[in-house]
Image (cartoon, rainbow, N blue to C red; front, side, top):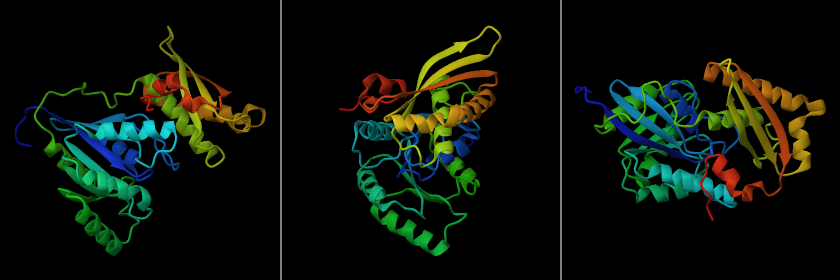
Length: 300
């Protein structure tokens, strides 16, 4: 970009669950801001990543995967995803060409077709996808939605990410930066801390723990010695899930806490004291207060 005036804009990153959106946001920002997990639908709040490119600040709205909502939690997540796409200077549709998840991708294409924003198609996993089917898929999707550009990338290896970042930067309108230069996310440290713990829950418990769990922040205390004391509650729906999270003699929750504490210390740059406890509440997904605490709007 020739002029040195500041540019600032919003990029909505949408796609079916597990398309690699969080990995891409982290790659564009250059560090971890969105949690990634092999379990679908891990992004709940509209986590923002903030990517810089010369004089351009790009605010990345990492939207929850858009899928057919059944429960109130699902409806809140889908609502958050579409809110993230409104007012955007570019909407980036990310597709996993291998899994595709057609039942979730098709409604998304239909909704996107009629939207006014500038739309960019990003096909992920070029490092492992076969070339011919990849090109055929790009052609097919481009016939359904008026994409201004198509990019082939690997969010994991970084292939094609610099080119995508350059292109996005060029689309951002002139305007003052919304955030300080050293800020990479608008998520409060309190909320970010719950996301880190929730990622550990998923990583360590895989299929044992269904999606019916939440981590709610309780206390976030700056100690006089500069360290941070964090108290969190892990909420599950049933007692047998509570037993799974605790593990034999509390071994599992200890391992989750240790891993989360280590990552939080690195992210925050200070010593972290993390205290976790588990509560069973079969109606937590109907709790308005809890929704607000984990950064979602209450959707009737």
